[in-house]
Length: 317
Image (cartoon, helix red, strand yellow):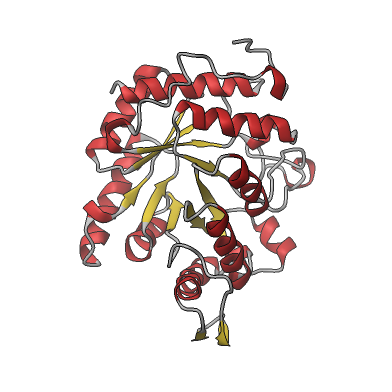
């Protein structure tokens, strides 16, 4: 494969990668983070990436969510080493509508949608439509975010976002489950109204992402699964301890709760991936995401080669 390839016509998946024959390594569903800030805005490249991911054997694509990109110059150091006004983040539901037509076999996952800065009923509608387009292969990961610049621009409160998220999750599940809804909450009022059409999944799976203790506890109480954000081994051990304790306190079973860690290829080796995955597998991980962002890859082909290597490594672990 030409690792300098940049256009869709030049991108193909090498024969040692594009087997799709591994199935689901160790019975775990493996996905890839869409490197949207690196592969850019060319639709051919986005399509080539998605089809390449599917050819390798990945079962879902996960996308990050940012509506507004703040200026580094104006907001430094808040945004340093994160993203700036030049970092492309596609509107996730619109993007997924496009991908649903290209790779209908792939589950599409928000990881995570910054829910409290969005209108809840509108998110319910968008996700329900996406669930129809994917024939029930939609998973909505949500979180509270960290960037008050976006909240300000979208006209939502930053300070109470955690509490609002909890009510939003309840509203989403209610709208996805019942054709006609009456709801009276602290921030939401629905008077005998509902979604049409309804989603395939009733309700759509709702996961939470984060690393703060409160996020872990919230996930254990309210979510169908949890995305532990990247951190140190010490952080992961703390997270899993809190998660187990809170699941037990809530009368829930870890065996039926989803856990999806993320392994980043940047600055790591296949041996690191093996060690990381072995630990997470022992913790009961049900899913895994491979992230190639930040790895210095200049083309779709390079991202796909890295994903292929990661797939083979995990499959052999």
